[in-house]
Length: 70
Image (cartoon, rainbow, N blue to C red; front, side, top):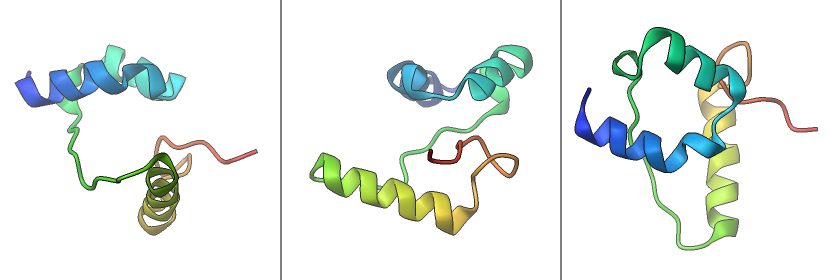
C-alpha cells in the first residue's frame, strides 16, 4: 500500500460513500488511487469546486462513487 494513499484514506474515510468503503474492503486499498487534485481557502470554495469536479468528471453513480444530491 502506498503511504500517501493510506494517509489520505485515513483522513477521508468517514466522508466516503458506503459503496466505496465496501469496494475498498473487498478489493483492497491498493486497487484505488487517492490524489489531492485541488485545494480551497474556504468551505464554500471547497463545496463549489467539489460540485464542479463531480459534473466535469461525471462521477455520479453509476459512473463513479458520488451519489446524486437530494
